[in-house]
Image (cartoon, rainbow, N blue to C red; front, side):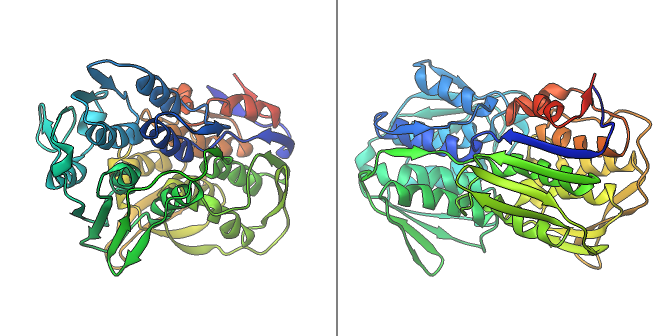
Length: 405
């Protein structure tokens, strides 16, 4: 796919998709409650649609393809609902570790077995005596938040509730807080006590939920506004609340001249002239999904920067750190680990790539690099990967004046 923009000026109105992260959590909670919730604005992302499909089926095997949240959430769901089930995925999913979650579920008394390689899918879940399931579990806090969220989602439906004890400091905390805020909205309380988090067996007090616009998807429009010569972009459905931790994007971008004005319909992004910093350090510990967006847009504007808190990117749809390093080299920008400073250093003088940007079957690689087309024509391989989280992305770019062929 070739992409360019003739004017480098953006004035558009876009309907931002519903949050995939919120949707997938709510679908599991709805299934656990016996489908008693009324859910509005569910995501159109392929991951969410796959989860809807799987939860509506009664097959012996659940194939999540490349949906990481579905793999982690369904593993806990089938344990809590006492299903005998095989949970599998595509080739890359079988390379993504799941041992911390399996260890935690096994410690609680569930029966989860590896079918091939120890520590990795596919998994076979066997039925157990649920009355013997323990109500306490230890788990690392510096692992994928999806493992912890999987446990939080089933906690209100366990006979004794669940107390999770963390053996390390929490990373990706904003995604755990998202889960807790959704549970709070539905009437499920939680309690922090030192390094422990407890949820009692609970019933939902509220049975409706409207999913907010996806802040991770909105991040690409902030990048577009930053790189463009002029920009006014209205994002319908984007809420000024902190259920999604990536809401922090709006605050981070103030210093780079992209301001956000909220109203009841959404958010207006406006580019203003500011003297933004040319040397930055950002910690993505709580917002790892924003790292690729910032890497590409900082490269485009020659902002030297240090990235920390991104180690979890190695076990996503691809090794995102390796992918960024390779593709940024095509625009004459280095992305290397600086052991003296304990962060990844981004530096170089941007040049348009002379070869296509590869996406590594990773939706965020495609969408992070697409805004660079404001500086000249670029080519992106395998553009259909955006279906994983933002199926309308390319059509929305065309609404904003991008030329796509």
